[in-house]
Amino acid sequence: MLIANTSDMPVAAREASIYMAVTIAEYYRDMGYHALLLADSTSRWAEALREISGRLGEMPAEEGYPPYLASRIAAFYERAGRVTALGGREGSVTLVGAISPPGGDLTEPVTRHTARHTCCFWTLDKAMAQARRFPAISLIDSYSERAEAFGAWWRRETGADWLSLRRQALALLEEADHLEQTARLIGTASLPERQQLVLALAALFDEAFLRQGAHGDADEWCSPSRQMRLLDLLIAVLQRGSALAEHGVPAHEILALPSMMELRRARCLGEDGAADAIDAIAVRFARECAALAGLEVPAGTGVASTVVTP
Image (cartoon, rainbow, N blue to C red; front, top):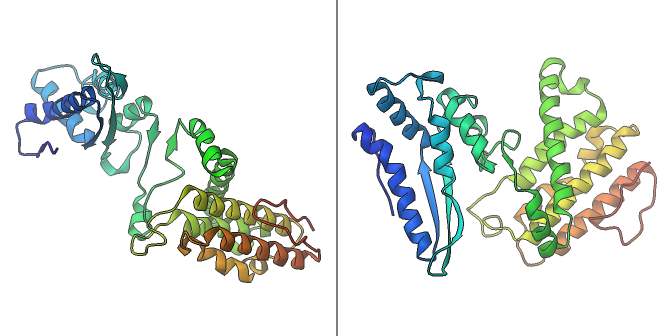
């Protein structure tokens, strides 16, 4: 169902449309359905609130919005959730609100108050979209307060410690984000070998794991098990590569290993045989790292193997 709310409509209709939409969603919820409401955008709704408040002569608060903006936003998102209706049927309402902050300012009132009342916040990165990197979601500014709750599901489905891998991947991206600012000033070649490797592996992580193409059957959908194997492989590459870099192996030699090119193409592997192919890449990378360090690797080395320290 679509509820249109165009800019040329009366301001009262623009303000009421979001309440009409959530009321209809609650109607389907009480019938035992699981309803999803996409509100695009709550910024326009907040602007309608500001315009009505101005016409009523109310005292404006920050940036001209009415002082009750935060409570209105909270009241809207509090209508989401799973309930058991009087007839015994169970249903739910999920609310996804899009925000269009002026100039991309994430500190403006609508964005700030919304982030206080939602459990998940996705931020789109304009620079990523202009570079044609999709989905253009900023992993640095986005967050979820329910990540810990999904750890048990991932362990049950894949048998892997998803929370630990997730923390290591986010730590890599955050470190690379800080290093990029330094690299702009002094140049990437002036950084220590490990920091050069971190920047390169963050770019590899973006290319080999975060990007998704819908034009091929292999990459338009990824099962949880294949996703976990790819993530586990990338973290193993980070650990082994960092150990080599800290012991003096140049970053460009690590990045030039033949298995690194295979890793870049790993996300394009189909579901059939992907597990064995990813494990084979992990074994080859471990052996190539051992060759750089002058060590031998047991024949059974796989994705979840320990770090080879020179």
